[in-house]
Length: 522
Image 1 (cartoon, rainbow, N blue to C red):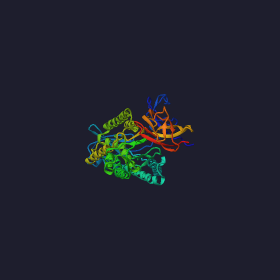
Image 2 (image 1 turned 90 degrees about the vertical axis):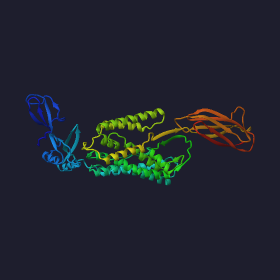
Image 3 (image 1 turned 135 degrees about the horizontal axis):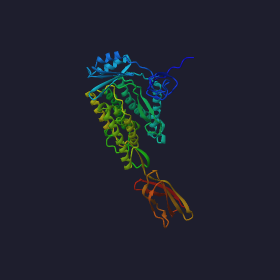
Image 4 (image 1 turned 180 degrees about the horizontal axis):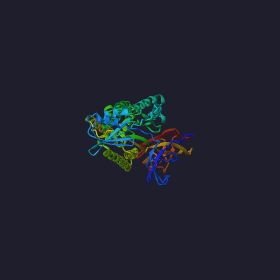
């Protein structure tokens, strides 16, 4: 029978007895096990986990590489790491060259500044498991389908307002537009990662089925490697928003050109209104100037959504794109403070909007996420001691400008507009021989939350008809929440067909409506 493989090495804290054991399960390094020593029955402590993968750092080779680029003042060798106090690098490319040469030893290095000292830590590089591209392709296909269905919703096909033969082309344009913006956003990160030799996955698109109006929650890529320095961190973080923003501009302009100008009218019931960022307003004034109202083409909605996604990604919190930029520019402490400040500002904005009666619920979610991301923090780059170049600072300023141009305090709001309408206008005979009828009008409100106020329902009779004594031609109602019924008693004085019995309804806040009734005396 083959002997069991030892799991850990233990040492008695009283007599120094050492042994390797296999029986116990919880054998993490540093754990104290009372009364286990067979010699003195003292407590034993776990000094080494024998099941962990052991990575041996070739100290002499590593020191030779580092000393070729940095003056080394102090050396500390520990378990699976080598810590060095180094001086100023011999050139700007010293750290990147050091990283490249350390790859042959299977090691990785980071540099952190502690006061006036630069501390370099060298540790084993742990290879990442290969991820199948099949998952990316499956999510890509599902997101194409979900954005196509969202495009059908935006065209009105799902509500019966458009034919499929017409709606499908607009839905295809929407899907192409939104997927182009999101895809190129993430490919910007991917290309930046490739330039700086940071291993990263291809984009993972996130499909969201209808009734979510955009059809997707965006896309992400996973960086499996470490960011080499602050310049790389800023440029990789900024590459995505810049690429997506550049594509969103022509997509928006084409979509606005395909949009239909319309005269604003009172439309009752729930409806979704979108807020326009400064850039969206500017593009609208350029493409469709002097337009009082505009029914947006789905492609224009795709461009608007691209700008919104860009703004949200540039929030300076955690490992969002804006978090990469602020971490590179301001360092760890200010980056964390900005993240917390962003979270509280978003929660405050949501509260203020709630008190005003019109709010965007997304700010509550993003405020909580910003606080959570800030709590988790940002790992930073391998070389935190290097300075940012002027080009990187210019890119950072461009990112701030993009955020301002894409910012919108109230992106989406649900409006429940009161609207009165006549759902039924009928007549029931009271006395056929005398030609008297009871006319009934049913008034409804399209809104489910807000009431129609100040309603006047007026009956207009043509020649040959008159109101019976006691009936008032105008019936006033203070408000309607769901529906109301109005009645008049009339008499037909002529035997010919009466075509012109009208009901005219007006209101203070719910528009107006009318209906016609045909009657004949017998």
